[in-house]
Image 1: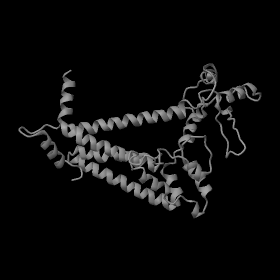
Image 2 (image 1 turned 120 degrees about the horizontal axis):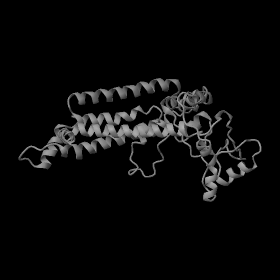
Image 3 (image 1 turned 180 degrees about the vertical axis):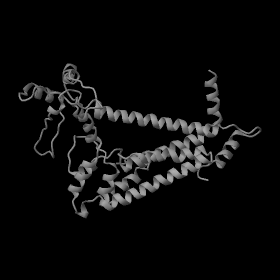
Amino acid sequence: MNDLKFAFRQLLKYPGFSAVAVLTLALGIMATTAMYSVIYAVVLDPFPYKDVDNLMSVKVWEPGQRGYRTYYSTDQFLEIAERSSLFEGVIASTISDVVWTGGDLAARFRTIEGMVHRFEWFNPYDTDHLERIDLRLNQNALVGAAVDYIGSSPSAFARGESIVDAFAALIPRIVWPDKPIVAGSGTWVSRYTGLTFEENTSVGMGQVLEFYINFGPAGVVIGFLLLGTTVATIDSVARSRAVRGDWPGFALWYVPGTAFLQVGGSLVEITSSAAAAAVAAILINRYVVLRLRPQAPGTDAPDSLAATAASSSPWS
């Protein structure tokens, strides 16, 4: 109990450091949760049954529709399962979820029965499992597909279209209610690789692919020079604030800077995340950290807060 009291007093004594620590822990928890969600969806749950090498995907081509689809309604899946004579069994895969648009509860339970019946745990020593992770997360194939699809035609490149979207993403939706820009990579990957994905599926393009589809190889080189310079500048300024003991200033640079480490995300995700983090850091500095600082005896709280805000501004 004494240790808890001491820790609580230390947190109140150094509110700036406490705020930075809380924000860092929050980011760490969010990152861990996101990584677990990805690993669970990619490794633990996509093919939870044995004999993965013998699995086949049933694809459907429809007249007038570009490409194929591998998703079905409950009734369509049950019909395929009942009429199939080529396969030992037909199972709805979690990587191509059955669309629950019809059928009663019993039909839905029958759809996932096979998935539960032949569950297989992830084995980190199984090279087949590891290859599946690499296949899902490695974006070399997407970059190569874009190179082949675009070819050497300069008119085929986006010419900064996605970069303009990245700056437009900084405008809050409360100011621009009909803003067409959303998180994720949208249809960019399909547009510049020619690959077709399931409906409503957003495939992250990452910075290598995004820089390439905008300006080609030169865009990749220049883009990463600018991105690296930005990250280095943010890191240098954050370090100088930490050395000076300016924890509010450190948080204002460090927390938004973590958004630039999304190597698999689009520039829209980077800029919007950095802006949201900067706003959060400013609000916490102004309305939480400053109010927790001890006030000088005989001074008015509002004047003292204003003076503290002026003297510790991270922009000074």
